[in-house]
Image 1 (cartoon, one colour):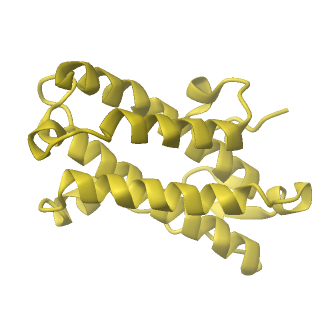
Image 2 (tube, rainbow, N blue to C red):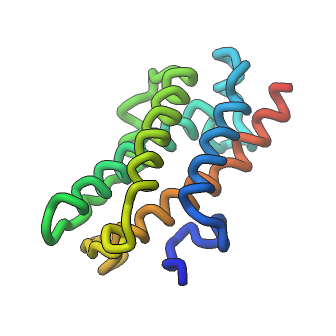
Image 3 (cartoon, rainbow, N blue to C red):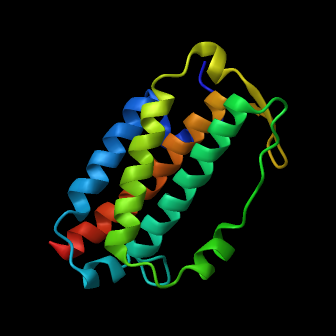
Length: 162
């Protein structure tokens, strides 16, 4: 039975590693020909631009990859929460292509690691200050669902670019 995460509805019954690989490839394909102004488009007025979404995805890859690595190597690991909006506010000058490249690289790095994890690794418990007791598998499932939650936004922007 897959873990229940805040992003379960996006992942559904899909296998998370395959979903991570597919989403990464899809985002790479969507953004491959974009020019700098294309990254500043948004899918809806008042929402994040493609550049901001991609930077946010890079931040999440950075954090979740670090959290999984720490959980695998640190007994009784406690997740450090972070404020995504404060992180975004600190990096307003990151270019869209740079954000995309970082996201794609970190996603591939993380997915390669996640693909090697055993059932015992996935069951390693961690404490999350907001979610309570979770495990490494929960983090992998959450990350896969999170990526999928933002994919439709980038697809909508891509339709405007085309």
